[in-house]
Image (cartoon, rainbow, N blue to C red):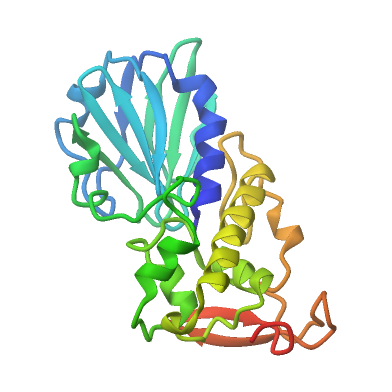
Length: 271
């Protein structure tokens, strides 16, 4: 599933081709997604200029002069800039035709993604109005995590993956940030100290920032807006390394399940 770094990589990849450009026509070949594309979507978008493209959590927000529409990549969706004459791929369900004979194509094999009209204030939408802070916002820090974690018995990995606490700390990045912080993923969130949360917040920011700079993490389906894979996978310290020696102490990495998600940690380096 594309996580925050992959979505941000996609945003950066498509922005030069879409922002400040007029959408001549939207072609919808399949409306059945996680939420069906509204029947009047084309009417709202055709002929309007995209003022900007921003991101909130894993949602891409396209600002027009009279409102916003949103694209979510779901489990396996991707956005690509191609020439309009480029042959369609299977599952190219939505196409935004742009100037210079280019188009933005949304490909989604599993159709768990979405294309929705949000109106003038996207942050009032039910999918966005209860999200926690972005990891790169100034209000996200160790104090924020410490205050939100009091009396929480949930494992700290589950806690930081909760989008109401902070957005973007998906499974891969939560594993990596906890390893960098020397914190066991199963430790109760309420037991961590302010000092531990200060370090963990810093490492969440660092690991997400590094992944964005390297184009995201390719494990199955993700490619960026230019069709190229991400490379952060090559730098993973614990994720996917079950039974392999820890890069710091050589102890075999362990794999457990927390919240039905694969969780990797070093029993020696993380306490």
